[in-house]
Amino acid sequence: MTIHQRIKERRQELGLTLMEVAKRCGLSAWQTVQHWEHKTAPIRTRLPKVAEVLGVTEEWLLTGRGSKTGPNLVGAFSELSGQEAQLVMFFRTLTPAEQGQVLNLAFELSKRHQDAFGGTPLKLPEPSPAKAKSGKAA
Image 1 (tube, one colour):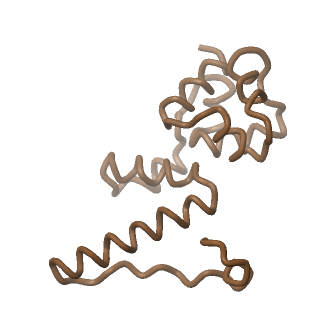
Image 2 (tube, one colour):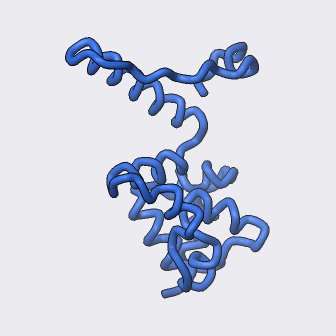
């Protein structure tokens, strides 16, 4: 399998569009990601960000060898179920604004659960002063 195939396969596993990957890599053109999947590999200086966005190791992305997600990711998730680990990996691919939306949804669901069944709701961290002033979610 080539780097092009690994990028495309992983993007599809995560359910991401070309534009979503481009945006999360700090690019404005989805065509760049399309080229990575068919013609040219990402430049070396961009590989760490591409690997991060796709939730894989640079070694696996470049060569297909070694651990796909790496010990740093696997070890951190050892106590999580498969679905929980998937959720964390997916969360890490989101933009900060999207992460804020997911956290707000989790907070609302927690409040509903507490109202129905009792217990302690989730507590969201306070937004940083810069984000609070701009009105943007974390």
